[in-house]
Length: 597
Image (cartoon, rainbow, N blue to C red):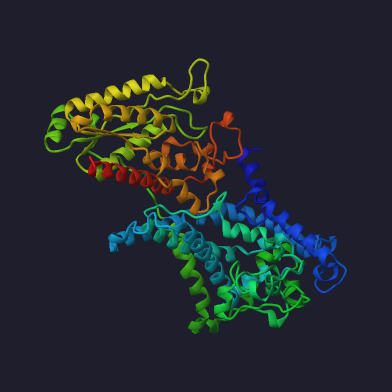
């Protein structure tokens, strides 16, 4: 069987081993130990099953209940469906919205761009802001799912669970997920776009493996008891700040007094403000589900998918066509989902190289004229010929840095770009070391690299360039560039020349921050031929990426594949955004150097 098919079929189970997922094994384990402590403290009051005393919250009666078995089956197929379709529909949504918002703010109020960059305490503030934005989007969706009749028919699937286990959290109809992913992507993109604009892409937040520390703490403090029969209330005060497991169990209650209560995910403030907060004064006996009649409608696996459509069809009548108020449910849903899908699917074309900035494409007379007209800055890009996993061509760095150097030159003005140096240190040759262990990699020694670099710079100085900036697209180039730049700058300091190693292009370009704030983990991002490298080349040279091998390499042996990170998440849009970050970081550094020269 094809390896991609096998990976796809087992993909639902990766939820238990992915730190960003709610059922990550550590979160499940923490919930288990909390339940165990509660059991020890008060055996009778904390563990019972829908009012039937003496049945543990982890008993066979619950785990093998028909409703729970439906949850397990639904979890598996819905994760496959979500991965194949739902996630694809919104894979770039927050990033597209972020870019649009940032561009709009730049056009309207350019003076505020970067105004908050470096301000003390912004990391703490952004940690809270991103947590609140994600939470309010979930609350709004949940509120609409309960209050709008059409959406409630689909949300009934989640509430039809007669027993609850941590897997019940996945008992969400695909229509529900369309709404949640749409609004979540729109609002998170709005927040990220504003943050990027105000902080000049210096957005950071406290996270562990890409998970907001507030959310991780919430997950560790018994999140998975929300969908269980283990009662754990946080008391009258904390329950006004955070939604406790007991409060969410009340939300699933079939009792009329509990209907539409505790709609929040993490924070209780939204429920407080909109009158949906319910804080139990003592332990309450809860019967989960929708009531006997409705529970029967959703008692089979297939009914979880089909019953909402059947209910909507049965409730339809021709006279509704003449009642505009009947359209509200559909209009609310479409007004959120359609723009989200549209924005995510905006066609992004490969980037085109700038013109008139590349030294190799000019005649000697054209270069002479440019120098006489004040073009005294030149960029020296360095790339490399190295292995980049089974899916990216050897010349990746050369194509990328030629494009970025060209765009930097355009932004600076009066700047040219020297030919890309594509012979760089890639490891020992005999015996083979580093990238040289993979076929096709070409390497030279550090001394040879520095010598060629110095000769190139001396040639450019001879012709009259006074600012020479080195831009390295590969990590192995940075040390040599820094050494040569420092040496020649000291040597020529009395001649008014400056050799600058543009290190911020490579190591301070905010790419990792950007990816983390968009929900990617460090493991997904990877270090080599992962999301970043693959996306960047897709944006510059799509044919340089072999799509059949563009997959998740984060769990593979690097010395076998030559790649790490999840290349399957790479996209042209993401590549363009990441390249813009490199270009912006380099342009700012060079401009600052020119000012103080």
